[in-house]
Image 1 (spheres, helix red, strand yellow):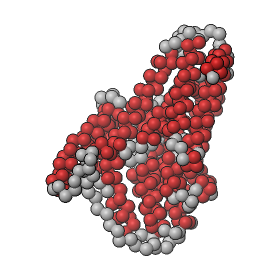
Image 2 (tube, one colour; image 1 turned 180 degrees about the horizontal axis):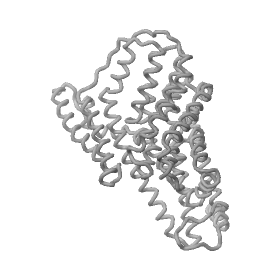
Image 3 (tube, rainbow, N blue to C red; image 1 turned 120 degrees about the vertical axis):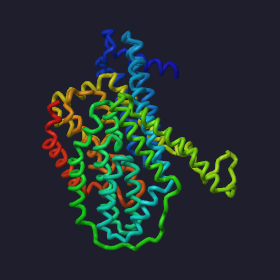
Image 4 (cartoon, rainbow, N blue to C red; image 1 turned 90 degrees about the vertical axis):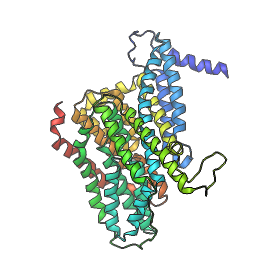
Length: 469
């Protein structure tokens, strides 16, 4: 077995160029066996990610394995070229980028989990269900709320929340649930596109310094149009029936409003750290997590007094009726966080073989910035927008702020074209299994495409000033 492994390594190494500059720059190794094998590994890993629901295999597992093997290939390739330190310097750059993203998302996810535990989202859902609105009114309300909530929370959480409302009031009305879910996915993705906090892609663009915090709001109107056009078209397929009113009211727990206020303060802190102190936003988010940790201590003391010994501690010493911050941290989407690790290192490794430079030359130098950025959005509907956007940021084409805003918009809303193109769509396919499906979404892709095209045209028309710098 060891002989076979050594033979494979020898074959891969023998395909490398005989000499290379010692400058530490990325060398074109796209035609080598190692480079081709790295692409094959990433494609195979991503195929497993796409079929996550069918295989019941967590999406983080294949990309983590692929990332490790790809970087082994990178290290071997550059050692053979006389640059043994190249791989270390390159991977440290990728790890720094991941650490910033990880800490930011960990803090944000903890706040979302805390608000969920305090019944913030359940109270909103019960309020909508108990109002006695018609199905058409609920269609517009769930879409509008998805658009408004996703810039603050993330599009995945927002889609799940509003999707639960649609399914609760829709009951057995499959036609309503399908169009409501599609509307929610489009609205959540569009709402997340104009905010650094609404989507992972916008967060990466902001943390990279390509677009300032307030410049994102320049694509607010294009994002609204991206949602409104398909929503108006789909609304004609929604019946005006009035569903049965549910009387199950849910109230928020103690401290819920103060946690929402602390989350808003945390966002302000992160923005201030980035804009005024020129520090990574993740540092501000972690300070915000500190706010929550002290409030959690206060809340636990209050609830322990209220419980007054009626609920005994379990063997671990935790009282399940009290607020425990570390339980909220433990409930973070660890599969998602580890998936980002795998994707960032996979794409970064492929960049070291020269693939991203080649793609950048073909897209941005060959087709032009606008055409390339429109295609990036379409590509994000097939492949997840996170690796696509990270690839663009790694390629780092020289573009105006208007073009960076355009690719932020297209990568954010392009995933709405297909149900598998965004985390919101994939999550709702799981929640409304058998009702909201790939095929059901595909029937309305033409309407979503009209909104996609109109949002791009609106951005080019409205934000011409950003294309000059």
